[in-house]
Length: 425
Image 1 (tube, rainbow, N blue to C red):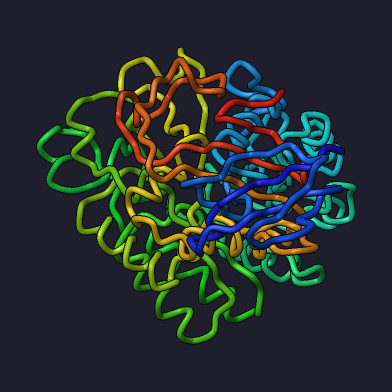
Image 2 (tube, rainbow, N blue to C red; image 1 turned 180 degrees about the vertical axis):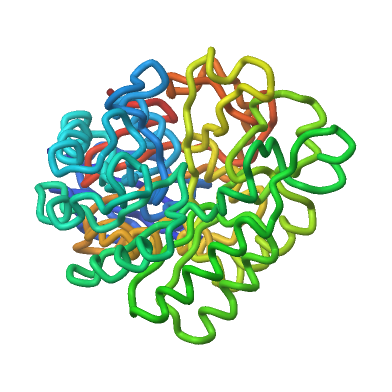
């Protein structure tokens, strides 16, 4: 295993120092380090963060390898500064059995670019009718701890209660896609002034807020752990704020695109801006950013959702919802939050690792800890070119946008997966 000496690097925004990586761990931190056998990485002007962790990634394999594979998605993640991702269950077949989650887990190990932690389905086939094999998935080699029907809401309150109760046995988490389906039938975008003007069926904010309100009450009643996926409205923030004040065991995530883009983008009728939940208003963005800063929202999660060309480059009404996110998330966070390195590390690494139970991830570089880290050049600016992305898909909403920051290197247990901004393998 090669040793690496990173010189003059700022660790989570602190004064420049040196980092020595040896045998998969951070061997030493301090100025003036020497290691004749180590490969030197010049860290001047760079910031070292604990490797990013994504709680919400769609890798599409098995079933839709034309859009993404575990390997291609892992490469995109590494190039985005990630060392671990949680892979959602809406594959084909659905990851609702121990066999499927173990398949995804093994594919991640074979790729060796990031740690891929499968998320299991809550219900069989995501159909919302009966619980999937939660215990078997938890006991599998993949050690599943988070379960979600993402893309579908667990709309039946009785079933949701049972799921929250069941996973308490192994301290599991139910991650809810908060969408009351009877309020969003036929919806094409956020319900508001823009949808009215465009004549598109709107998705009301209350469809999200009502499910979150119901589920925090259920979680409070049974003492279960609830995680709310892709929060998108100011009303949802207030429901979460009140629930946390009461001590409910609830965490929440927001996506980069919900922190930056508004429903005005729908005026272009470009399906790249069609997403679930939809882009909301500027007022919602303001509330989401404030909630992220004060901890009501715990995590930035990408909801990386690759789609094949035929599923996205078509009429708005027929386009599949979803956007790429892994390779641009840290740049969006830097653009939205500024160089608040401790906050970025907390929301994109430490907290998601803690929620997912990923030991060895989300730990700031320090002597003796696993060398899972990323180096970013905050002064660099890059223009996003879809053809240059590692993902098999091209549905990025940031095409030809110039964003701050560039990932220079990513290390997974001391081995580089990215060096000089390029994937190592």
